[in-house]
Image 1 (spheres, rainbow, N blue to C red):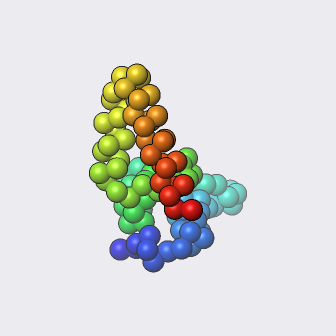
Image 2 (image 1 turned 60 degrees about the vertical axis):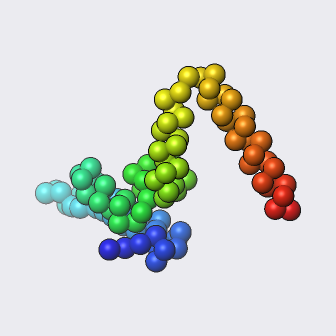
Length: 102
C-alpha cells in the first residue's frame, strides 16, 4: 500500500492527476474524462492517507490525526457562541506558540 511518507508533495499531485484524471477514448475516438467510483476514490485516499477533499483538490490541508478530526467534528456540533469562544482561545494559543518559536 502506498504511504504519504513515501510520496513527496509533487509525487502525490502527479499520482492524483494520474488516477483521477485518466482519459479514455470513446467509440468516436475523442478523449473524455474517466472518473473513479466513490469506493475507488475512497480507497485511493486511504492508501495515500489523505482526505477525499484533499484528493479531489477541494482542500489543501492534510489532517491525518483522527483525534484532531474528531475534535473538529465535536466543535462543529456546538453553538455558534461556544465555537466563537473556542476559536478565540485557540487563535490566541496558536499566536503564543508561534511567538515562542521565534
